Image (cartoon, rainbow, N blue to C red; front, side, top):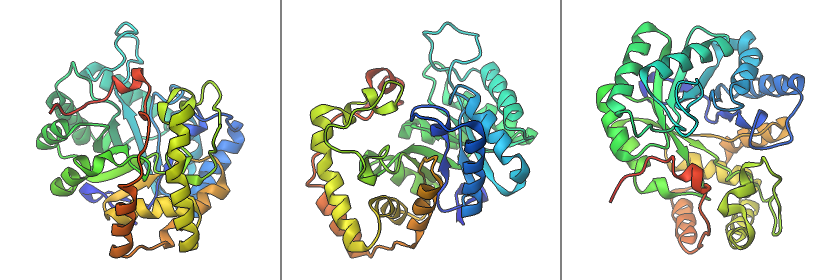
Length: 330
């Protein structure tokens, strides 16, 4: 088990559950999804990550049904922050007004079939609501027992500092992998300084680091990668240099490319918990077994040195999603 801040104990890897309902078709039948989620628990996963916007709502409903028999043995993380409750026009994509937070929490509790949310994230920072107000509302929800821990997703350093000063954060969730390392310069060192856990989503680069995406791969409409610049055309072709590097190093290490990538993520800091997403139980086992892959300090330094010579191409988000990110101004 690993400890995030606030004595929240979770498995060394969590399960990102978004792909059961959106972004990565085809989707399993409900019965098969429930079987896979419960199978993940049998493998050893205790942290299950969802959000009200996944579906929307259907992913939480799925987890609620799947995890109900083992509710007291798992940690459920969900998220609020999107304009899903009809109080604003569609142009306002994000909202963290107090009323919307409350609507989100009550809905999540019902769909998840639980009386508390173990870890609640603000999914994206709302530029129209001061983060201090959000933190105060989280403080109230924690005192009420509806939320046990809270965190931020894809937040800037400024926002993390301001939120943590009002109501201490247990975790910051952001993308981090061999395929996206930007947070090594700012967010991860800040989390270490403040004693906040870091939850790494897309630690396999949305399948890129498994080695299964090839030159010329085309993603169907509805797949996240369909219009994400990193996975298109010449960008994709350029990024395969990293994939070749990972596959070669994994072979020398005696593990799969996915295990190499996940083990590297966990080896960087003991407060980092990756949450790879998969619907396949074989992949779940493969990913979980990455815990046995170890790196020496010298190996990590050599990997980092080699990564610095590989030039990656393309943004990770399309223009609409990129505009929602909370960024530190120079």
